[in-house]
Length: 267
Image 1: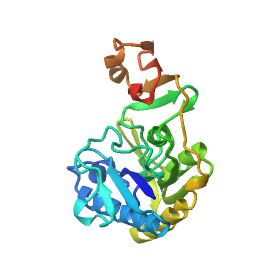
Image 2: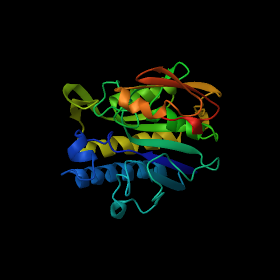
Image 3: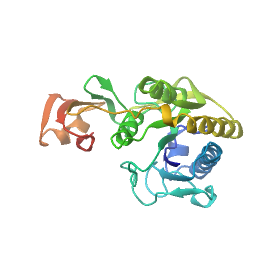
């Protein structure tokens, strides 16, 4: 069975600081991506135990190497490399399932390192559904009939995924304990985190369970056409879209667009 893993960094156990851990120049960035890699390896082990025969992972955090330590990766995990961070590539209907690893909640969710794609979108809606990175990834795979069977990350990410799929398997590795400070538009939360070892054990077991749910999990899809609405934290971020084709300006910080496919989503 073929499994595709979409990876991020902010939802990994022990990762709680944007500047120090999630940015390439950060003092603890290398430590953070090692922890992310160990979690991914645990996911791979669990998936193999559950019957996976081929696993591909796309490291989607920032530019190369995308938040994963290539040298430490599980030998049975193939990496989609040098593909940028604009979204996963190289997947099609031949995959049996997709898994989300190291994910965070959308902007405004109250999660540990919550944001939606970039630091400046405040809200993104597809029709009446408020979406973040989790929903868009699930829908992208759903378009080719691939179900999302697992999400690992903080509690906000888990809640977000469960709202989209009641049967999705989950591994919660940390919890927000209230806001500590603001970093521009980003809300920095105090956090309670599992130890890396415990998080790996939790993820390994969840991945094994998830493999048993593939046959009974329906792909998540977004019906087209749909109305996209994007609201930014400041007017300067919306300014560049005001003259784009198909854009209807709603306010100095927001616009809407009628979209016929997920490829037309902009923010």
